Length: 471
Image (cartoon, rainbow, N blue to C red; front, side, top):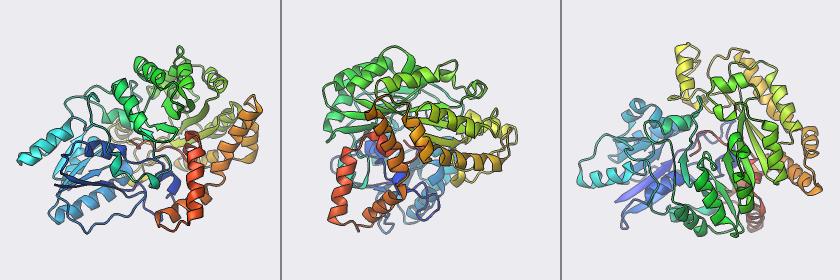
């Protein structure tokens, strides 16, 4: 059986929002995980449209397409194309889970929720020609899953090929979180066996790792055992965590001892009313400054996430947030316009209040205003968001934030990571485009390889904000 796994691009190449660095960071591990369930004699390929052209002239037996909200229209068009040729098409992912009735029109079979249990069940049904139209995960576990098919991933196409996922979901339930809707209806947070996770890490070459888990510290006992197992491996890694997990106990010190050097933290808002309305309980009554100081003391760089446009925000929120982040010495900041994703509590509230402005999924990228804010106009929200990025990454702000890092070494690292990539992002975009078109000279290829091997994960993450849709 010939199986083609496809990740359509989130943004069309040539769009003003197309950012090669952002979309060349991580390989599609979700698809590579599903490919591991195929039989040894099955032929499989993974095509990531972000980093390679998609050939539509073939006719595989099975086409598997991963759908996010901003690639939905492209995913549907690809699905329709292959179905018209007589190929069997299945769709799954965040957007399919949120809007199954929309997706099923374009597929022979759809999957909602995580597919570690449902996909092998489908394959068995498909081979017997007794498949259902809709598969829902009936069991949430990562115990005993086969090794990710990294042999189907061209590592050279990605800036962070050593990305890894050792857990699924998050124990928290934020009102605006797309992932929370994806894991709804079952256990919302679960992990691999520690030995399996360590085995996957050992199979990855090089030194640097990027954990894509929604909350790497979310399961304390698992995380502690994982970090203890990693101690002595000589790894350098980045992950994501919450404010409360950074302040609670000594787990963050254990992570630092294992090699954690940078961390993505969802501060989201400085206003407790926004946090309460968004069910961001893990941030309520937490001392942001103490969490930041603890990370600084451990030499861990911070990529801070903020959301603009929540109900208690006014036009002053942009300047206030930027000034605070600079004052705190945050290494990089990623800003988002609040976006009501289908399937979330935020979306339901906006719909019920008649505040949704559009259902054009291409605009649901946290860079566009898709609902009517209360404390400002849509134009003020968009303008303030754009200005926040410009203000945080001015030379003055970068130099000012660097002073909050005690040693000269840490000040230099802060300056390099904050300035070196944001200021030279256009140059890196050009290099990646040349790489995609196979126009790289041996010299440029050697330089790119050397830099990405030496760079810590935070360096590459700082180039642009992580997309909340990223698996």
